[in-house]
Amino acid sequence: MVEKNSEEDEGSARWVLACELRRLREASGKSLAQLAEETNYDRTYLHRLETGERLSKLPVMEALDRVYGTGGLLVRLWGLARLEAFKDKYREFMKLEAKATIMQKYAPVVPGLLQTEEFAREALALAPAPTGPDELEVNVAARLGRQELLHRSPPPDVRIILDESALRRTAKAPEVWHDQLTRIVGAAETPHMTIQVIPFSAGLHGLMGGSLSLLWMADGTSVAYVEGNNSGDLIEEAGEVARYRLTYDRLRDAALPPHDSAAFIRQLVEDSRP
Image: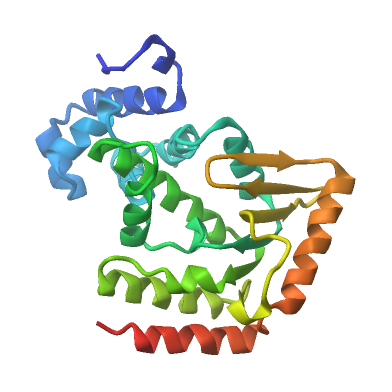
């Protein structure tokens, strides 16, 4: 039997995934030790996936799909399960984000789509509500899993405006921060990603209260998601979305051009070498 923390857990995508992992292994006649040998993942780790204590990362599900010949079923269940790590409005936003063809974002901190694993782990560990190591790893896996949308075919067109504060508030470990800045530079060099920096010298602007995401779907509809410290609001009313778009356009005009932004971040990479 798969362990669960409450009756509400039963029927959740994460619980279904755990049950399916256990069922597939038992149907195959494999022990956890044999599965660990075939996948190169730790036996205890695989057991915790089967009990629902941990939510894996995408490569683990891909490896298990190959072992069981399940044709991507586990990857699809994992995609649903990681959505459950987020609250309702944000979960709905994530569903829309996964389908968006155009994304425009403003972030006062390094956004999840650009975070390295180590930086994400440090950032999530500082959340106001304390979490244990298992829950922290679930949250890290969920955040990194979002980045898969950048590798769709075709990928979405993404523009991210980073506040200079996002590039000045360093991680504790110099090597983690250096890797994070390097990751941002690499992202800026991809064909479907544009990154700009809004410098301190630009002064006050209309989005200083939090982050903003604007999403456009293939059918031309658009939504906005505004997020503060401990709250988020999904906006679908066309007039209000248009107002946020105008605010974003003004911010883009005040930001450094993409070429100058890239040079700015590359200099920070050089300055951050451990």
